[in-house]
Image (tube, rainbow over all chains, first blue to last red; front, top):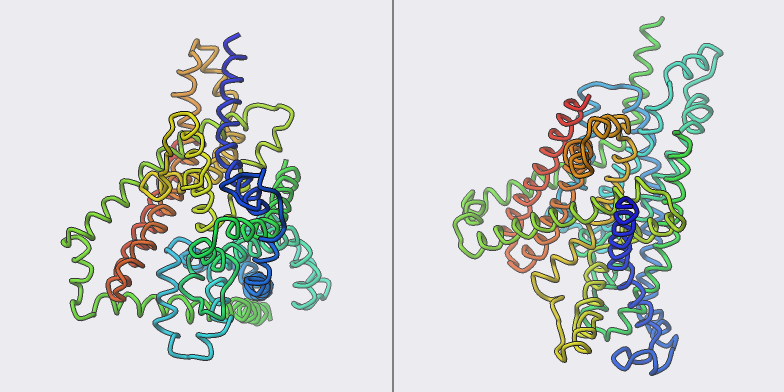
Length: 263
Length: 261
């Protein structure tokens, strides 16, 4: 009897928490397609604001996509081999490397951005190009790729598999592409989704690193929140949701599949 | 023969990790070392660090940041602890949808979270509107400490829920059964079995929410000072506090795990 009561009380509480998170999202979607938000939905629905945002800010969306894809490529090239090494050799040194790689996530993005500007700010061509932002995103996302791949690699007996292949005459390149990569596919995929999601949403560091010509989506969002009417900020937020929500759904699905496999 | 192979393998492994190490050294270690040096050897030298503690305005902000971060962490742990425990221990229709809704904001950057708070508590926000209908006066608190509190809460809840759920699913149900069969009531079981079992998860997710609140507020504050040396030393102090919170949590969680085993 009291068990039922407690169940419903907890369910109600959890629903309230989810409302706290979801209601503002719904409100901003409504505001983005409403003619005048103060008057409410009865003032009519329109796609005018979204078109406005597209003509003013579409370059930020393209830049965010470019940076995210480049960041993914770079984390794959740097992170997967690094994770492989960390899985093969477990010593004090590799643990230190693992710890160090996570620092750019633990330290406020502002500090990293400030440090980058101090050291590399005077190289104008680099400072003003999108590559400068890519470097920041790369530092921030690399540990997620490394950890994700490392987690999968640590759960399989890599040494035995490789030894077997080597005794059959497989070269290192053959082993790496024939055994290592196929075995950590799920880790690479989860890491890749994480990297793209984080890169598209990164703001703290990017805000310091950007120039007027290299604004990413979140920087443009901050700009529109500060200087445009609420409807335009909301319409822009809708476009952001369009990019980020599919990525999140994929990530969640993936996490569930991984959990299912572990059981 | 075998030694030669071993040596070649070491070289290959070194070559594989070298690119990541080079990029990390060039773009993070060196710039950060330089930043620390500048902050320490500016016109005021180490006084720049001391100013944070001696200058009343800076000190006040630092204390306000600490208090706010601690309050947010406590609230997030309590709220997300209840919701996470509930979701992990019950099965009901619509549960996965509820969980999806609770974890959506996970990848929202700070700006978007801020906008969500404005949507709720800003000048044209929902809470203001409801208060206006009920009491005839608009309640607007998005632009104050309460708004910051709400924003960090919004940011932290999804993270803590996920961690608590993962830990709750690993709890050994036989411990709880044993406690019950020995006559422990619901609250007793919660206090003596479940919460200690979740301890490490609560500590580590609490540390993360504390660190994000510290980092984010510090960013805003640093930008407001507009003095490069001051900004550098502040961001390093904040970075250090963040790192310390995370390291302490890790060692506490580790000890907790060891004690449970």
